[in-house]
Image 1 (cartoon, rainbow, N blue to C red):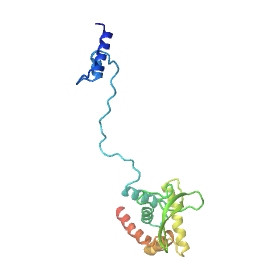
Image 2: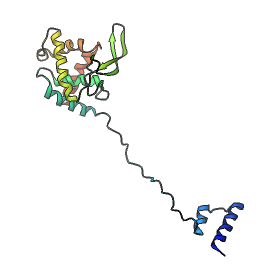
Image 3: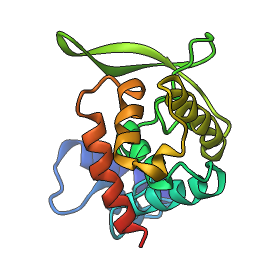
Image 4: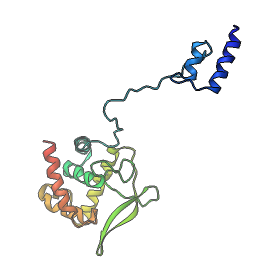
Length: 201
């Protein structure tokens, strides 16, 4: 029988009678009509582990990086552990920066800063508000500006940065009253400074 006639005969029978246990593709393949390449098989390989982008550093990495940068760029009287402790509270261990490379929550009222939601506290309690924060080209570049901010605050209260050597507890209290509106800020910074110093031993 002519192959074309055979093919038409089989196809006709498929239309009028169900052939159990044999797919159309398999049947056509048997008679040489299934000439197309089979579809590509999807890979069943699954990556081991759970790969995640490093959106933020670990606590140890964050402390080490900021501590090293602070030691290199701060005035001798300002403790590096103070800068790290404030950076921890202002960013949540480096997870949420207020402005680009701004780890100290430094505000910018020049109109060039990044607008972010933040928490401020007043006589009626704490509340959420949108504030402008300064942007820096790098984390290291924010350190000298932070240094100037700390120095300016202490001078505005009649002190110099030497107070950190003479009476560190009082220096932190003086700084905290102007640096942040949270009434518990000084206590939190002191506690975190101790933690940072222990991590960097």
